[in-house]
Length: 217
Image (cartoon, rainbow, N blue to C red; front, side, top):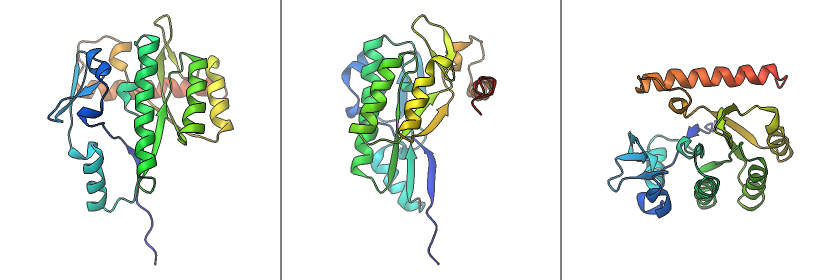
């Protein structure tokens, strides 16, 4: 009997430190230290808990654990919230080009996602077209909430974003929606990982509530 494929449906890959553009380090948008021990942003650091966050080590880990394929999502740290427009576009383009190269070079192993910023509709639509038409990516990664151009946090299911979902439907994209930036949306003293997980659940609940209120179910 033929063995069923084993697929990791929620995976991430970090660029090696030398692959990250200098501007992202200088602007403290996102980087990985030279020892590959931490991923960092301005005022934020998280341990890299396993070597399989990186490509070659990920391939070895998949082989050792008999994982046939992985869906690689965008890094939550690169949703672009709070960045100036041009910096946001450059950071997201780097993420999408990085994932596209992974998929192109290892198509049998990885299906990779791409990310857009819902707060800038025209740019988001253009990036969807580029990622699908030019990069052949088929998984759209979205945050549950995003910061608009005046600094207001809004649900990704806001009616103003209908064009994003219509274009995704046109291209028959899979859509992954993930919570992040909860600590920026509400300032509490407790910012431990436990708090982070609780707030992520609240973000998911709020997004789903907005989704059903707008008759999108």
